[in-house]
Length: 164
Image 1 (cartoon, rainbow, N blue to C red):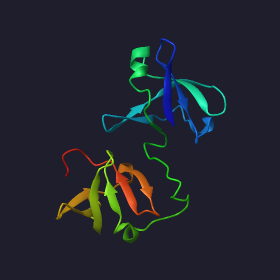
Image 2 (image 1 turned 180 degrees about the horizontal axis):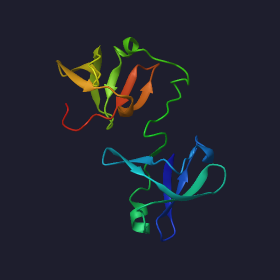
Image 3 (image 1 turned 180 degrees about the vertical axis):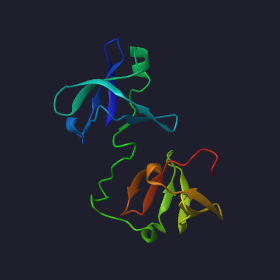
């Protein structure tokens, strides 16, 4: 999903929702827009279908055409900020051992390193990743997963600033 243009003077935007559909939009849950490398949650105040692949959306806290213009061109992520990946088949389960060897990228699409081990620390599972010739620990929780490309062995994580 992508913000195509602003619409009107009250902060509405036109969004291309393909490949999603209007039924995928849950007004009770936020959608996420990446701004300055961070996934920012936005709640939908109102939306109206505009043909098969477009909707007009009014987000809470975006109340002017100027504010709407600031998000034009940005991707919108549904499902709690987790992007869907066509290569990861629904129902395809990965075990922790299968993640060893995956390449880790951060939310800015910067390669961090290769997963070399997994530590099941109570209440804080971590991935051990080789980064610039040293081993670093990265928290591993489903809320931090942005994308999994199982066939390409790529894992994109929202890595807290200052961790690496």
